[in-house]
Length: 150
Image: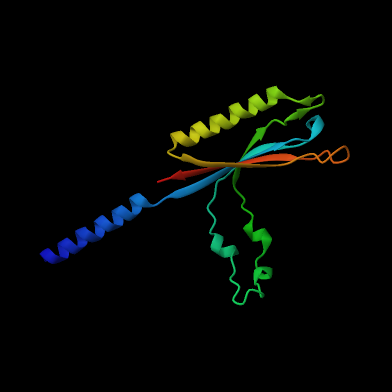
């Protein structure tokens, strides 16, 4: 009986240690329009549902044949997300610094809220697809904030 108790206690300790070391990640994305004249759409996006990537993953056995055609792109779309309106970088007269400061305040508010919820900001990565000249008139600035929680 004593041996069973020791085994049970050991199992519980290992189980608890596994839970303590488990990590969870979350990504918040901002998309800020750099379309002149305020015609673009800028948003901060936070997905609010869990997805198992395995449902959309296939394996190639010989490097050539792929079953990706059997994966429906529509099944990968989630229905529940939090969408926060941001302002565009440009107004009719050019770069709008007030809009940039306003976006910074909104994003800071979200980052502070995430920190209060126990999320730790691990990485920030960004990219830009900018205006390619007179006839383009399109572009976005995207930033991904990657959080970790134990």
